[in-house]
Image (cartoon, rainbow, N blue to C red; front, side, top):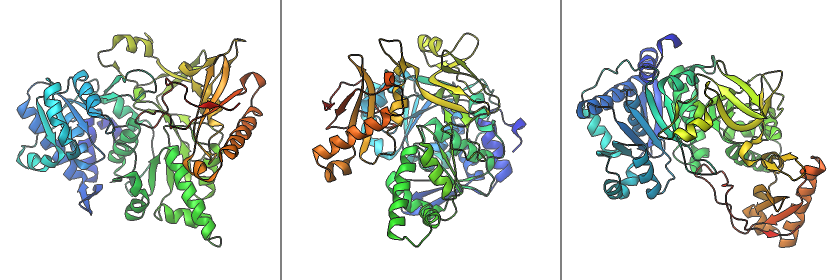
Length: 510
């Protein structure tokens, strides 16, 4: 695809249809059967949705979209942004009350939804006075059939494409304003990442910018066939059904799949683990991209040793999202999160990573104070992440600035740095490190299997040994001095990140 011809979402959809035509763009399960849509099909339906909206609403509109990954979701999003309007992708895990709140805060005019949200439509109509129309994905085929396809307008790169709400671990979610140019820069910043022969299995929530840019936009750019996973529980079946060549995951999925591979290898000791792994992943998988959380270097190496390209990237919603991306040729597994992407500049200021790039957001929707806090007057984005850049232009993350523990002796401790050292221990589900009465404390929630198979005294001994092992890797000032065990799981965001602003609930054992 000629990058010079693509300045907006409309351009990307238009050019993908021109270049890839009747090649299959999307595969998804519908009623137990695999449904296929070509790049031409998609372009036609995007034009029909845009035509419907422009014919009914002459002024610019905001269209909220909610539901699991589906063709209807994509047509609604691209039909909105491609028509020069603004999409508002919503987290499918939100409560009805939170959904209504965001519909109001985002000034949503049209609400497009998966049929499973039908029961909450009366609440939307009662509590969201700005919403003029609710469209179920079940009604979409009929709507598209009767709609007149519009020629997608010449949308300027500075036009607002979407308002994407964050799911932060502290405070109220913020509406990140991403322009057409932000999305396109991020999708186009690297070259030779894939070919039209590739097949991608999309397993992450589609409202997440990581999934949306790196699965959907990248597929449109390169002509990849994108296969939609219908449930995390069905990943094994869908790997075999679609036989992808690449997939985007988070470390939690990498951990789960690796445990399955090791279990299968234990049952088949005469079969090479690489052959078992390839069978688990459908037989054709070459590349795995990981992001969204910490990836253990030894886990990354395990996948590389099994014959996969396994690489880690880094980004955030406010940067559309890629800040650094994996170098497939780098097999060092040094604990970095990839090389800074083209067109992006990174600097370190007081330990914090600052970014300047055409991918950086315009600001937070109707929130000048938070925008001023995040963006410097000369356009640098304060990521809030602590880290450094090495001589190979690789980024290393050491923690979050807002979570930094400052001890009475002036020593700075990153809780994430300590938490990551517990990664990979099967008897620990989650750990949270914080300061309690100026004492570095680790609060642990045991893995369910460990609670079933180990006595209370065995668990406590295992946790103490784990803390001792961690403490041997840090200077005495950063050592964990207090240990708590929880009986209930930590409260988490919808993206499964622990909320840090929650009360201590674990009993002290050390």
